[in-house]
Length: 257
Image 1 (spheres, rainbow, N blue to C red):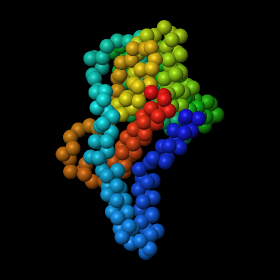
Image 2 (image 1 turned 90 degrees about the vertical axis):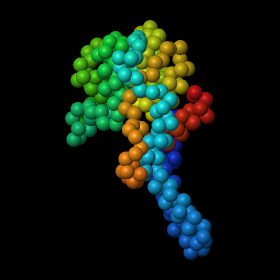
Image 3 (image 1 turned 180 degrees about the horizontal axis):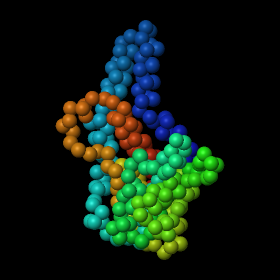
C-alpha cells in the first residue's frame, strides 16, 4: 500500500504537472476573467522558469545533500557491513544486455568501500522483480550484485535483498538480514539527496549507522552563465528534489520516522 501511495504521490506533486495546469487554467478563463488569467499566466511562466533553472534546482536539492557531507573513502571508519540501497541501476531489457548504473553512483561507492577494507560483506537492497527477454526473473539486487562482481567484489561477500520496493522496506528487510548475520554497524550507501530520509529510517534500528553518501548533484559554483538558463536537466533535478522532500514529509506524517 505504501509503495502504491508513493508512486501516486510522485505523479501528483510533479512540478511540471502543476505548472501546466495553471497555464491551462489561464487559457480557459482568458475571456471571462482576463485579469485573473493574466496573473495566472505570469505565475505559471515564473514557476516554469524556476523549476527548469539549474541554479534553482541545485539550491533546492542542496538543502538535502548538505545534511550529510560527502567524505572520502579513506576517511570513513570500518563497519560490519556495507548496505547499498537500490535506485541507480537500469533493468536488463533490450537493447541492454548487462546491468548498468546510469542514475547515480551508489554501487560504485559501495565497491570502493569494500575494496578499501571498510567491511567484509555488502548487502544490496532492491526488489521490483522483472523478466528479462529470455523470461528470467531478476531484481534490482541482482543487477547491483552483477555490477559489484564486475568491479572486483567476490560473490561470496554479497548478500542480495530482493524483496524491498521503497526505502522503508529497504530498512525493514535489511535489518532482518543484518540481525541474522550478527552485524551491529553498517556503512549506509545511498545518493546524497536521499541520505536524510534513509538515515532517519535506519536510526529506528539498533544498528550503528554511518552515512556514506554518493553522487551529489549540487556540485560546483553557481557563477556559470548557463546555470541561469532553463532546460530539461534543471527540471529533472527540481523534480527529484521535490519528490524527496515530499517523501521525507510523508514518512513523518505516516509515523514511519
